[in-house]
Image (cartoon, rainbow, N blue to C red; front, side):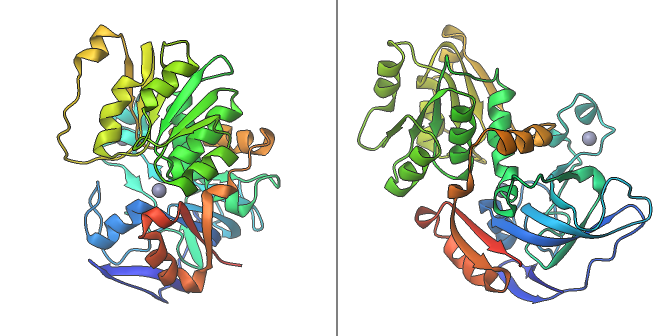
Length: 340
Ligand SMILES: [Zn+2]
Ligand SMILES: [Zn+2]
């Protein structure tokens, strides 16, 4: 088969690669849609949050069609439309046993330590997979991984409903998904994002208000919407220094903050005393444990179409061009490759 193969730091090509061979306990899948993620570039650069080896095929935001199953696999059959989880915990350690397997210290990451979906075919274990209903397209299916992170950032920090105002920092894929999820749950949503094209997508996905933090005071806008109190829930999905710091200024007293934006190794001045003084409930999260089935049902029944998050589409054999475009983050939101 052909796939997007990284062989060494900064060395990659769409090239021939051995076909995946399944065991009795595995599922062979034809990749149908696969989103390019910022973290794919970490594999290209040679640095990722957990150890990995080359050669590797990235691609952890995907949907596909089952073509063959091992003889012990009973839950799936050829023709099933599926999506697969990215973070795979060991299942046995105290972290996994407590239900937060995405923080397992010995976890595997599909598309990082296991070959992923930027290829014609991939293989997976059935326990990582979920069936996709007909109401959810392959394009939407390949967005379930980022959507699930946003959905989890809401439901694992108190949930939300029409009584609340949710402030979302950053209009990248996770932030846009958070707008769709929170507004789909009924909340009024403020998207804080400087780029006009990202603001427009945010409005399409359900943002009540958009704020450019470089020209307006987001704290004041949120206060005006909430009788001076502040946001009930803040989702930090930008990961940039100013956004991380401002997250502490947006919630009401006793409000909640979910941190899902990635920022590794930076030291950022923040008034941490506010956490105590204002009784803030602050949570950091990796991945989206135990919410995938809920996310699929939500997308199938909420009427929310998250496909506008995909701003650029390529064929699989154009994947190198797709990577070139997706590296220019200010020009796109999600770049996706399709294998028909
Ligand atoms: Zn990703
Ligand atoms: Zn574990």
